[in-house]
Amino acid sequence: MIVLGIESSCDDTSVSVLKDGHILSVAVNTQLEHIQFGGVIPEIASRAHLKNFPEVLEKALSDSGLILNDVDAIGVTYGPGLVGPLLVGVNFAKGLAYSLKVPVVPVNHIEGHIFANFIDHPEIEYPFIVLVVSGGHTEIVFVPESEKYELCGKTRDDAAGECIDKVSKMLGLGFPGGRIMDEYAKSGNKDFEFFPRGMKNSHDFSFSGLKTSLKYYIDKHDKEFIKSNLNNIAASFMDSVTDSLADKLIRAAKKHNCRTVLLAGGVSANSMLREKITAQSVKKGLKFFYPQPKYCTDNAAMIAMSAFKKIQKYGIEKFSFDSELDAVPFLPLSE
Image (cartoon, rainbow, N blue to C red):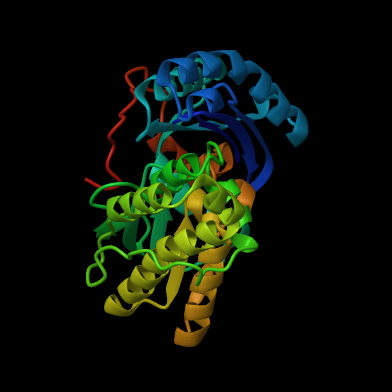
């Protein structure tokens, strides 16, 4: 079974080739056009996807050693995400599927992030608790069985990744902020300053207060102080973010009597977050899984894997070419 995965929910144009549950290749073009704006501009992203998809498809096929006619099914992200970029990916998938006479498997972007864990860890068993944490999403989900999702907690305001990006811009470190803040934090002292942890007694999250606290902190100190302590400020800030994320995930696992915890989404690549959850998992006797970094950010390998799991569960005959398939920018994880 050869599955072609297609992902374009934001600013990453990606195509992946999967064979019998194993990823043969994944090609990603991360758009650099948005750096100057400090955020993703949907119209620019859509046009870039249109330009990038043929080249990214060619690379993914070349790296896999297969040709387009070998493909048995196409998995594509149809939501949630930015509507323009999603439409480009969905229509690209439909065009390929029509020409190849193969079915299209619609994939929820968040579900794709969850299934990124199965790429390197096929041994994961249900039930499990997963923390989905990225620039657009921060939520804890209980997964008792395949394609059954129960929301345990979510952000009431900013997503964790969004907060990290905005604080990175406040500190003059640039966009996107995830990797930059992680690197600065590695060489800093997390006890340099204490920043608030929002909604301590809830499974929900709040990061707007933390963001505001950083703004006041920066305004209160002169530029030279901030510049000379960027690593310490980054470490202290990331300590607050990761404390909230790790503590609430472990508490949710205890509430559901669940022995397996997962990380998913772009922020799951953060080293401090992984270290904290690893330490707490060892202490509590939990199994902890997370994707390797290249599968944390948006990528088509996770979409191909999710599509493959659906085909395994339902059979390929359940899926067909659907000319009516459309982008759903606010698609929920479960109805």
